[in-house]
Length: 78
Image 1 (cartoon, rainbow, N blue to C red):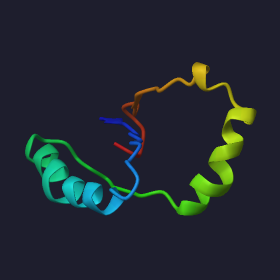
Image 2: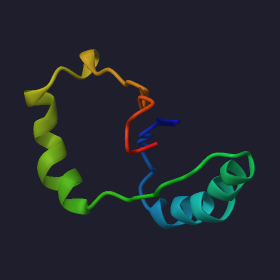
Image 3: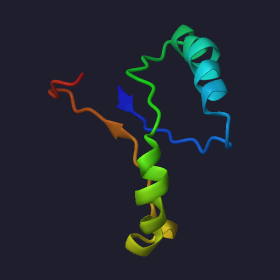
Image 4: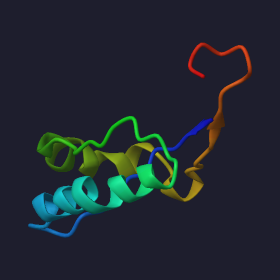
């Protein structure tokens, strides 16, 4: 088993349509293919308005790394 966090940049005004597509089409397809989807989430607006503008001053976006996490055999999260 592994965990994956995917973050999508949704076009302005399209969040409701994207969530509908994810919940009614994409996630059911992924589940049908054998994936276990633990959750689907949307960000809160305060992030975009208050936190996101500060992010480039705090981190080097060019150095972001995405790591696939695989639970070890004795991990309780199996």
